[in-house]
Length: 145
Image (tube, rainbow, N blue to C red; front, side, top):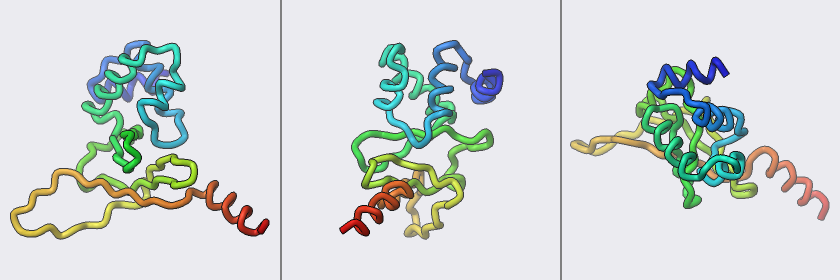
């Protein structure tokens, strides 16, 4: 918990007991998460508290947001040195099978040349397909036919 406290303090967030509980759940979540996911995992925590905490963490760059086209904003914990600048953004992958969204931090968003006088403020690069688990089970289902 001391490491989680340090991470929140480093981002200017006071590490209260509830914030630490929520942050711990976020860190341990195996892929990108939604507000609904956190409400399910933290069923004893008030939903408005979870929502406010997500907003606070997002504002202080503890987490980053992902619009994967599912209609539900997803979030993922930022690395210690992340400032969520355009140059640090990475690709996300949304599985059409299990509906999970994954950060692909090792794949940078390719540079895009915008027309003159266009000013880039944000990039959302989401690839869609089957994750490793779904593609494996899909191949097994195909080979059974």
